[in-house]
Amino acid sequence: MKREEGVPDRYTYPSLVKACASEAKVWEGKAIHGSAVRCGVDGDVFVSTSLIDLYGKCREILCARKVFYGMSERNVVSWTAMVVGYASVGDLDEARRLFDQMPQRNVVSWNVIISGFVKLGDLTNARRIFDQMPEKNVVSFTTMIDGYAKYGDMASARFLFDQAPNKDIVAWSALISGYAQNGQPNEALKIFLEMSTRNVKPDEFIMVSLMSACSQVGCLQVAKWVDSYLSQSSIDVRQDHVRAALIDMNAKCGNIERATSLFEAMPKQDMISYCSMIQGLSVHGRGNQAVALFNKMLNEGLAPDEVAFTVILTACSRAGLVEEGWHFFESMRPYDLLKSMPMEPHAGAWGALLGACKLNGNIELGELVANRLFEIEPLNPGNYVLLSNIYAAADCWFDVSSVRDKMEEQGIKKISGCSWISSKG
Image 1: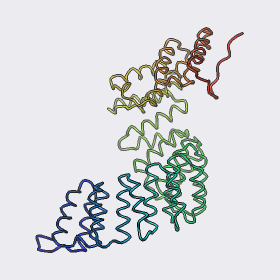
Image 2: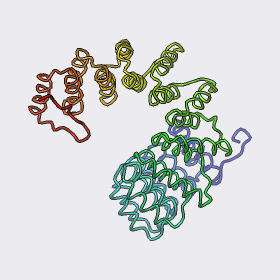
Image 3: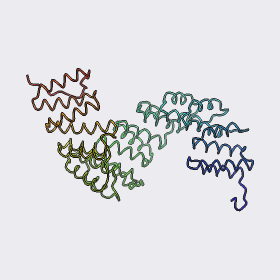
């Protein structure tokens, strides 16, 4: 346009600035800002507001402040853009101070503040502001529902969901995924069925959450219904995240043939799909097939991570394949995963081996693995109970007593759900 000697004006500058509203293009945005100053339109409320939005999204909060406080006229969008800017960089004190000064507050600005507190995990302040809102919309409710769900407070999420006068697909999705992610798959299924009676059409994200819930429940009948529903819907099951969830659900619910056909139909299998198949085979007593599939993955050049190793070690534990499990465990060393793995998967990998030792009565290896676990998580009573039961199964009662004494010395109490094998006499 400039080559054609066209002159940008107050209407074209906001569009140009909007096109630069990403951190990668902040310098282009600053150049456009300079051009607006030279053309004398930087004081226009629409141009200035677009610049505040740009700098806020690019986390250039000082530039946003300079534009905002330099404005001779502001509208509710200008104020909201500045509040959003503060919230995006986590400065909620300043965001709230500016919010309180706003001459006008529409619903959008209230939602911005709530969303900022939710993202920081401060649900107490988010709820306080939510309760103060003179008017709430579906976004207000959904933001709070999603926040409660992400932080595990499903009782509060459900309460607000029931209170919401209008529920869109995002609200339903937030509640269903919340139940699925917080280990309440039956509730997720109930909400989905309730949604169906309201003639709300589920999208791919709801279906992925539903499949996750089915995977946890392990109900083949429900899994087949979901699979059938998907095949008749307009949702593209070839999308990676949808197909991965479909494979995982069928594998864990026992429809190994369907999971296998979906897996083999993939143009290229990835780590997630391999792990889903290996877990499914393991859960349903096909340990040898799980090992074979893991080896196939290695032969195809996919380098396993700590999650994949934990999955295969657990599969070996369930199937009593101690030698195979130890082989895979030893093969982790070249990947240097023993030092780099986070605590939980690391402990999970050793724990899977200890479980296999218990199944096979392998005392020597069990002692080695248990001692490593005592170093990693010294206060986990389950590891002591497992070792004690390995000793008890071999009639090594002196060693059983030693493990119990060690627990008492450490001040560790046996948790409910773990049981000692009764000693003789």
